[in-house]
Length: 150
Image (cartoon, rainbow, N blue to C red; front, side):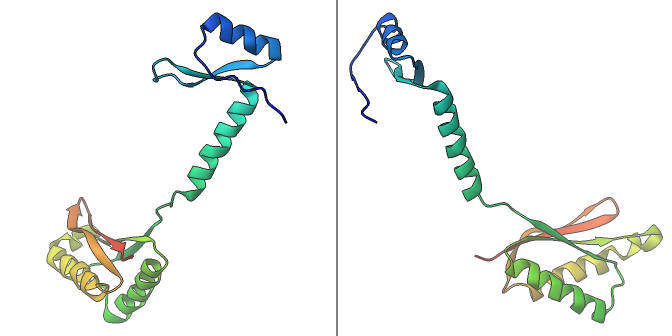
């Protein structure tokens, strides 16, 4: 592909006629430059290349996965340990963890127990992740976020 590349400053009319002579399009590469930078090329090919670049960048971007673990205010030790193992696994895989205590009916009177449970979980998972948001009561849920350590 021996392309005839002519670099220089041309008027719009000249550039358009050059593109027309070659059967191609005049594509504006960087409009913010002074003077604006244009290139004589196939516009469809330009769009294709641009989409390909965006797709490659999107593939490199990491996706944040949030896993949830639900507790009750009266969760016993065996259930707690079972859920803690799952939380460890999630953090090792690199997912964020959303641990919450759900208060049903009148169990809202055990707010302190729910907070103690979440803080205990944060302490037990200290080596796998760090607390991103301390326990916060939102309606009938007390929520805490833990992000994995890199």
